[in-house]
Image (cartoon, rainbow, N blue to C red):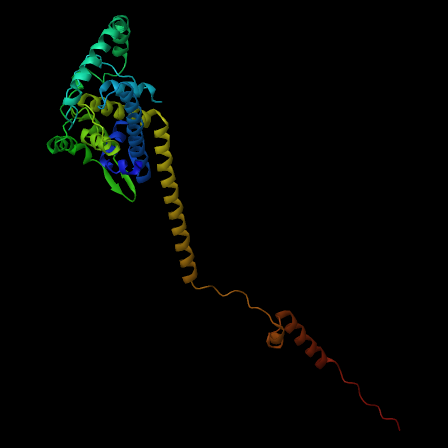
Length: 318
């Protein structure tokens, strides 16, 4: 399936929430599309890796363990904690009665094999868990406060962000939030632990595959996806791509404005009446050109000298 279909499941306001938490005040349509694509690509890649691990364990339902293995194999190298003793429960919108016996046998065998390993790694896991972000705590698994696929759960999620979303404005191809509004929004962040509704994650999953996923696995995928996108937007390549799109839009807008001003100036120059320049002398008009004052005065003096010269008297010779 083409990723653009998944991108359309995300709205601009979802990306604006990521921007706010990354400290970004301005964005463009192209930059927002970049974030949507990164979100969809991550879900697509993790799902493919999770399905491989699911098939390796001879199951037809994706569990949280599959998501953990998929994230460990993903280039992001996101690590999950707290999945060892999770009760997966029912798969979302799926009947698992046919798999109960197989799952019980697999879980018993896996628990016996992992007992010794868990004893040795408990201390390391505790130290790592104290230093890393606690976004995968056991309390967040299961259905969760905002994880329901019912319309009521999605509505409650959108309502919790109404005040924050109201600070954003859209004009001339840009979405903006002022510094004062941004600070106010950061100071008034609610208790909702998720930026995007889990209903969107479930929509993406079902659009990519018909295989069911448990609620705890979907919760793990949800947490990992938001953590990845926010991290990349703040400190990764996604942030650089976002900035490039914004700068490109600003430069194009500035170039268009310069062209507009140049055209306006040219039009005004054409409308302005031209001043008369020096008279152009042409050969056919030379005889009509009045003499210069020096030539005129010289001619007058010459005439006077002619009149003042005494005439010679005629002498008759007889």
